[in-house]
Length: 400
Ligand SMILES: NC(=O)C1=CN([C@@H]2O[C@H](COP(=O)(O)OP(=O)(O)OC[C@H]3O[C@@H](n4cnc5c(N)ncnc54)[C@H](O)[C@@H]3O)[C@@H](O)[C@H]2O)C=CC1
Ligand SMILES: O=P(O)(O)OC[C@H]1O[C@](O)(CO)[C@@H](O)[C@@H]1O
Image (cartoon, rainbow, N blue to C red):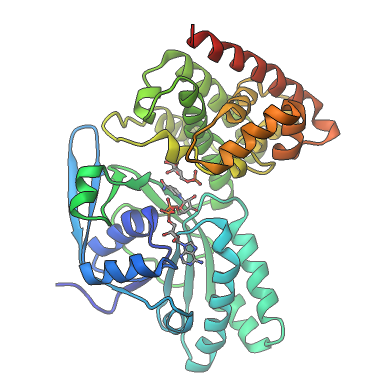
């Protein structure tokens, strides 16, 4: 019997919203209230009334049907704001482009929550974007600056919480999608960690969802080491014309390079954030021992949005500069960046634009443009340039 009092509003009903957050909260008795801007698709989801989540592990696969949800009207934001006013738990499972409008809607709802006397609201930022809580806090404060009561409520009653989503979510294989276009496949055995420090009120009891300490340090560690390694695997795998991450994981050269890059970034993170030796070892073991030979995770998904991924604050340049700050040479991280400039998928416009730019203006200009490196970052630039030439050469040998 589901407890109808427990509800979570999910903004962004994609792989993570539906597949990871949605299915875990559903299994713990929560009703899902779903909002997404894809109007037609959401209409179909509402009509279908259920969807499949497949969790793929090494030994077994789990399948569950999620059927306790409501889909909100997205023709305008009226219903969304109404629901943020009454539901106390909101999960944002979107990319950065959606942050501004979500902050606007949360701000409107906060004004109303004051008048209806609602207590705590927690906003779970289920994103890999760095600095998301800071952005939300600043944006909402700015929106409420003229309303002292709402601003006060925001400071005292609203938790803006980073969430570490340590579970890949991807569209299911074709066979499953043919039967259910909303099916999502995830990795069995991942985790979801919610920032404990900023959470207000009673913490949700949901299996596989835990509280985490030092969430800010943890999200940097996750993105700079785990997500970096994953993306570098995809960039290098594409150069060898593999299709899935599991294929790249069998390639000794790729494995060597991404593991070395992981250790460089991990060492920099350690010097920056000073995790305990147990926290450190658990993390290294957790990332290096992930086994997902059964998960058909396409390179095209993992490498998607290469412009964002190669940008200054993101998962390659970020740790590489952190390495330099801590006197570590980011040799392999620079190789990861170089393979990013070689990454081309004819269905991925960003990758086409980047590689065309390299072709026309040269790698040096491309590094400046996409990585945003400055004069003083000459060492990283030089490393990327040299790795790029070598990567291009290695790729040319494959054709022979
Ligand atoms: N897929 C994965 O394995 C993981 C993803 N993440 C993070 O989770 C977030 C979501 O990723 P995915 O679910 O994979 O992406 P996705 O593309 O499958 O889902 C995002 C959804 O957000 C919707 N959306 C866009 N703008 C919106 C708006 N203004 N309001 C409401 N909905 C909006 C889109 O229509 C889409 O359905 C990203 O920040 C990603 O970095 C984190 C860990 C794992
Ligand atoms: O597109 P982004 O921001 O890399 O987010 C998705 C990534 O997050 C991960 O699940 C790891 O957190 C990867 O599997 C996936 O590629």
